Image 1 (cartoon, rainbow, N blue to C red):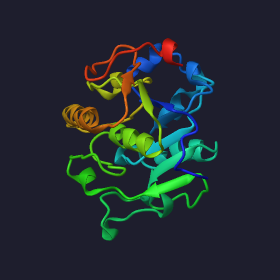
Image 2: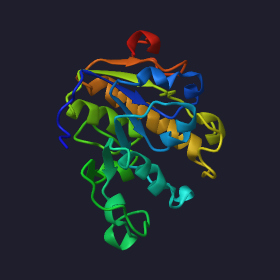
Image 3: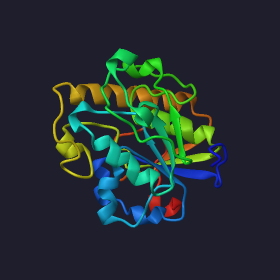
Image 4: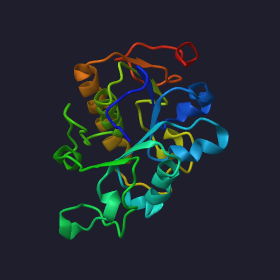
Length: 224
């Protein structure tokens, strides 16, 4: 599989925001789209499936849920960009911050990448597959690396309150820590500041509502 060619000029980057409750994702069928993390939880409500999938985060709150998340996309043949610890596992003695007992192994449609130093410093920069801050930064960088000429954001609300209200499904997370809201709001703002300053291609925001003011607002119905 060639991860370096974009078959179309436009790609839709789909976040996991609450706004997806008001979004007709079936409009994206037939278009290139990239999704992240627990997007498979919305599949019972849509026929749409992404062409690309990214996961570089692991939450100790979710135990081994990461494996089922990933395999939904790997087995569907989507191009996947994954943290390399998901390949064979991770242990603190190897310099990792998380403990993952085992991995999913090698697949033709999977590209594994290491987390960059920014990931553990709550920082980010515009560089090859930066994994710092929010996953949206890595998604945008990957879309540019793939050769797309235009990005449209969907479901990227840009603001966090509590996990039971921040996503398209109430039990997206079963538990969370006390710093959840503050940490995520800082990270998402920094990520979009970097993206808006450095992304070399146009970005439009087709999110229903949302709080991102740095991109031109468009209607998904007009772009899909």
